[in-house]
Length: 66
Image 1 (cartoon, rainbow, N blue to C red):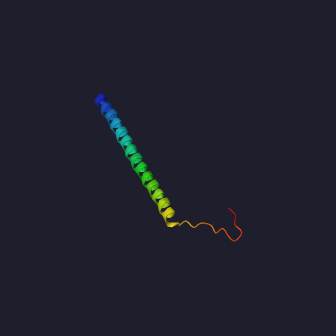
Image 2 (tube, rainbow, N blue to C red):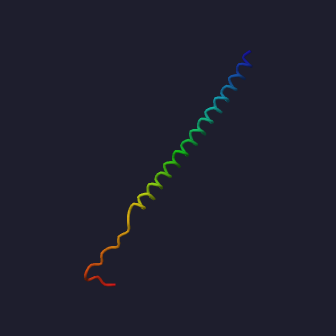
Image 3 (tube, helix red, strand yellow):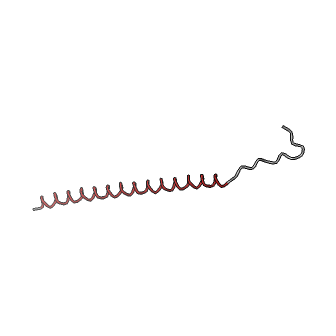
């Protein structure tokens, strides 16, 4: 009987290790997706702010020379 209990304990530990590994993998994937979405938002904010600014050439003034 103790032999079968140790086998069940070993299999339980292996199963829990697999579950933990799966949880880490899913967490990493979610984190990567969140970082990518934040990066895309940052890029779109930069593009939007660049579109809002208008180009005005500097005034050369009275005594400006080429």
